[in-house]
Amino acid sequence: MAIRLANLADDIHPLEPSLNPRRRLRQAGEWLFLIPGIVTVLAFFIVPAGYVIYISFFQSTIMNPTASFAGVGNYRAILHSAQFGGALVHTLIFAGGVTISVLVLGLLLATLLDQRLRAVSVYRTVIFLPYVFPLVSSGVAFMWLLQPQYGFVDTVLQLLGLPAVNWLGNVHTALLCIIAVTTWEFLGFYTLIFLGGLQNVNVHLKEAAAVDGAGSWTVFRKITVPSITPSIFFAAVFSIIQSFQAFDQIYIMTQGGPAMATQTLTYYIYTQGFQFFNFGQASAASVFMMVLLGLLTGAQFFLAKRWVVTEE
Image (cartoon, rainbow, N blue to C red; front, side):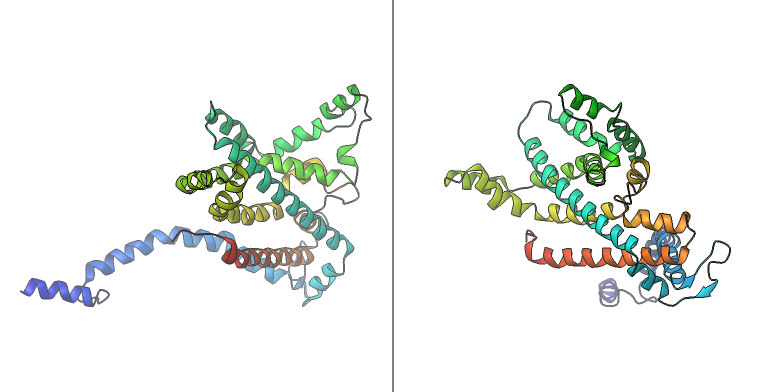
């Protein structure tokens, strides 16, 4: 009887230290496992982000980051800067182009790989392989492929009797080339995301729809796509975040040119901070990009509440 009462007391007062010291000790151990992660987030994310916000309110120099208080002057300066406005437009075009490309092409490739094909594992490896390559090496490779005099692409065009194109030196094609290279680099990752979603689609629903006379396109549009909306939502959010952070391929292939036609927000921050040593405006641009990303992600989560289909 006494043992039953003691167990009942543990259930009623699970957090009482005098009644359940073992449970408190176990909870303390669980918190100890969280300490490395908390310290990492504080040291590499929270503290640096807070310092960037702090610096954005000062006219900073390389010798004295807090030389003089500027208030919102740095924010006012970048918002009235044509260079910053162009970088913002290029970033939105770049992010939109990459996101739409990886979503459409990734879903198409995932649908093909979801079929019963021979050597499907080989196809998956080939499609995912570009994602393993460093962006720097991919940028160098495509820079030589698109070289106007000796590049492979223009050599093929000349063999076909077509004029060579200065792909990375033309303001109308440079950003499109960066979008194409980034899409090629990331496509395999998003294909695997969609493939995982497709393999979890209820097969019985698709078979029932086919029995009722629904065609392949109708089944895909009415059953498959709604069933993988969580995967589509995750891919859209992650792709936009990756696109806003793009730097390596731009630095290697065009360095923001020609005529700043490929300068994005990340490259603008780099030039302001590490070429002109204007840390105040670079920090203000970083804060602006962080807020913009937060708003875009929040909007996506808001839309996901209506569109994402979840299984109860």
